[in-house]
Length: 65
Image 1: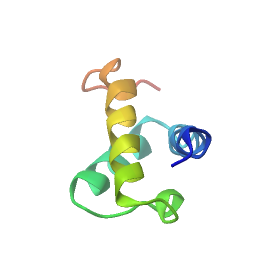
Image 2: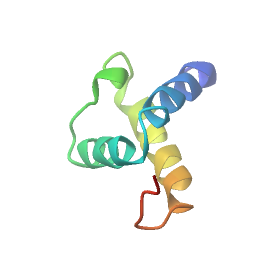
Image 3: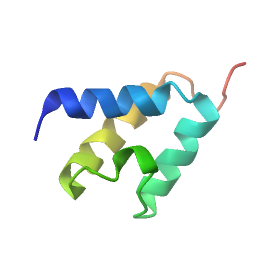
């Protein structure tokens, strides 16, 4: 598993914006795969999910515009 690839995928999801990141987190938690992550293993997807949750924890329940 390549850390660079995981970092790039996290960045690709984050660049979509707060609401889309939250949507992708929900997809991953439901066992579904956002398009940006289709090439990753299940283990990598779980690492990405955890990273996204850490990033989004800073914002609480709100997405600021």
